[in-house]
Amino acid sequence: MPACLADWVSFSCSGHFTDAVRAFRMLDQAQLALAMNKTVMIVVDDSRRHNGYCFASRIDLIR
Image (cartoon, rainbow, N blue to C red; front, top):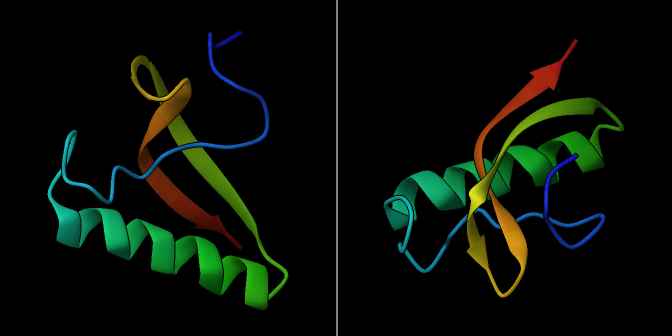
């Protein structure tokens, strides 16, 4: 079980753990999945956190 605050992740849009362009693309993917009522798989790195929220290093849309 990751050592993160529950139910939320960080895409690091500030550019701290990844570049800002990649972070915003991951955010766009999450918003698209929400709008289309699709499921996503998110890879979480609990060794990198923003204010207790774990960094999401990858997000994939599940068909």
